[in-house]
Length: 443
Image (cartoon, rainbow, N blue to C red; front, side):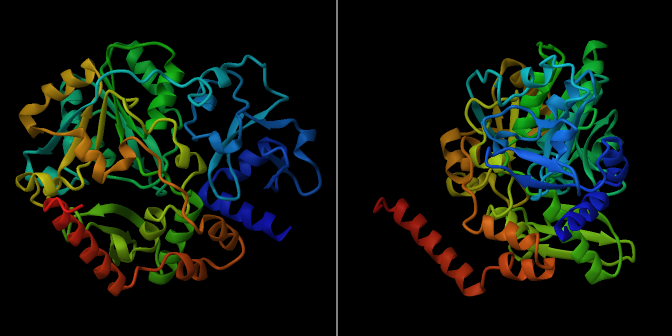
């Protein structure tokens, strides 16, 4: 039962209230085991959890679940818990002894009942005219302009932010000061918490609501609301996939061990070396700082090699055109190849407008941003996640096997080491040669 104790220790560390959560379910020591039916069943040290009646929402496979929290948010009996599996991803588990069998959970599941994705996708290149805002943003600072327009209408903005315990969760912002925490890329899946319910409350009050998140979170919001609201504007990010929170917790703990202090803040996208060569930064409570460029940071190396993404991200139901939100935001990677005048390495956003509501909102904030019409097909060439999913990393299965058995320091060295300099330079030469040949129309 060593793995059981390791799992429980991690769960209580990442989720401080895990002990009370487990006790409330009458199961104290838990671990996860995959059955032949390709579903997950929870066990106690001595008793099969079927004795307590825990089951999962009925999907074709467990891997279809995107973790959007719509089922948990709609449940009137509060009988659904989001619990982590051995890879660290949260999945909905139902206590059948409390379940009224109303069917609401499955009716709002965006995987079972996907929202309609309609409209024409129109692309723009854009960046904030305030250079301080742009420098402090992951891309071009367009989301900040959308936030400002919402606040000017006495609206509320929802987005992902780290709390005091460095847990990423969805929060509501009512002014620019509160909105600062929602800015910037966070390469984790946020916990929705009560954000869907809060958004519905403000919508019913007639207040303008801007809700931002991953495409599956936006789909979850629409499914939860179950009706159209004229005062709701949605904004999704073009998502590479969400990495395991278990891996991030281990990564953070390893850096805390190396620095002999607790991490207080993290920034995934610092522009100290430019927009394209961004850096990851963690600050600690002993006034030390960790900073690495993206191809030298262990967490980003594993993330960008698709080693520990959520299984559903490899067959995402919502990474397609037209996209699910009113407006989609992304980095306009490769923009300098076709429009060098739009690329000063300070950050250029790709804005994809899907709906009339999105167009009106984008037009309303144009006074704060520089905008150019763009070719969506050109943008897709350098950012294929606009309309497709990434394949699992070749070493994904081996990684998680070692993650659960080896010290994380060894796992980092085995799977998350920087690419050798000679290989990076060879790749750069190859890409440059390909670019030159394409311009010469040789290939």
